[in-house]
Amino acid sequence: VQLVESGGGLVQPGGSLRLSCVASGFFFRSYSMSWHRQTPGKERELVAAIHITGGSTKYADSVKDRFIISRDDVKNTVYLQMNSLKAEDTAVYYCARGGYASAGDSWGQGTQVTVSS
Image (cartoon, rainbow, N blue to C red; front, side, top):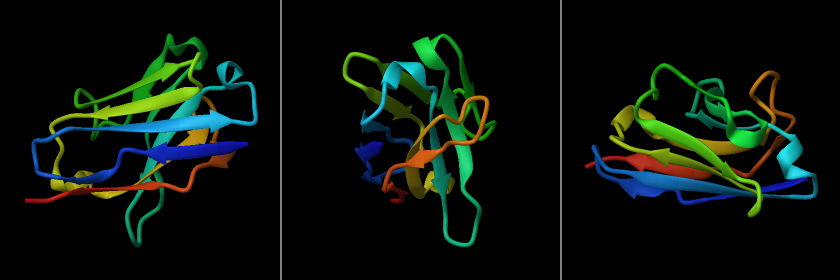
């Protein structure tokens, strides 16, 4: 299983970023996928998850109405569109296999998102 995130960076408050996670080594469309984030000294938290087929999604309350998770089963890729970014969204963001109805079982290396003026 390999998960490779990209798209992180420095953005001003109110700005947008789109994270991508390319998956390989397993049958992508048979798994839910999720995004998590972690800041120093805190536990990793679930940000968003998407069920197989993309028919159902769920979000942390802190990002609801600002972030959108989606998937492309042809490209084996899961995305996280992040809008109206706030300083408190600053974290390392991780892609995970699973995470919709159970804990993620494989993780990417993470991508840093920094929201600052």
